[in-house]
Length: 116
Image (cartoon, rainbow, N blue to C red):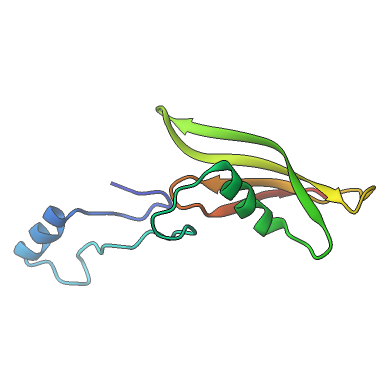
């Protein structure tokens, strides 16, 4: 009954049942739109996942490249990707990059760790 992020979702039948039972708007569950970082009709692929991950770690004048990419599945369904990014330019820079989670359904990145 709970989507990712703990937001309750009810179907049309649940909404109709709540109305039929006379639930006040203050007590009825609300339909909530899921946040998405993908344009409509687009699905997450590895190139887009790396781009999304890079967006949360970007710095002017610093180029990042993926060092590792690990898909995470739950009961055989891919739920997200963990991406390790490292600095490739400027050469010799110490630190930078990090570890980012990118949700498969929404395409939204979450910074897990910044390498300093």
